[in-house]
Image 1 (cartoon, one colour):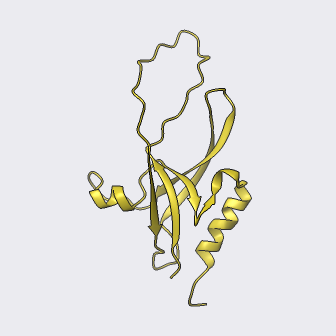
Image 2 (cartoon, helix red, strand yellow; image 1 turned 135 degrees about the horizontal axis):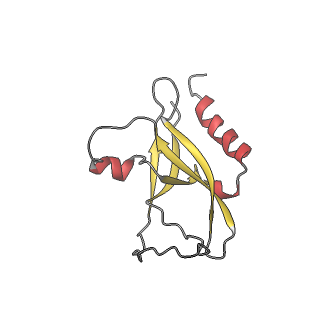
Image 3 (tube, helix red, strand yellow; image 1 turned 90 degrees about the horizontal axis):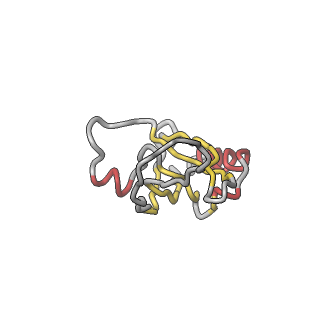
Length: 125
């Protein structure tokens, strides 16, 4: 079966708009972002066992940027195992690239098409 190589970042840190009057929040330490490449394998039904959620987040100047988060469909009980952290998807991982194609320049339709190619392509057809 065909595999997809994706680049993800985990965990992500976001910039927050600072226009909320009288809201006092504690200072937070910056989060170290680990970018890693994982190879996803299809399950027996031909899926990759994750869902993609697209949203927009503001940068420091307040300009919105489209991002895509991936979430595994299946969860194990207990904390993530070391191999899950190194080689698998975790809830909240940000999708950066699929087989070398940066997803930040793709429209929602283009991303869906790219995902569909991986889901429907089979070396057995």
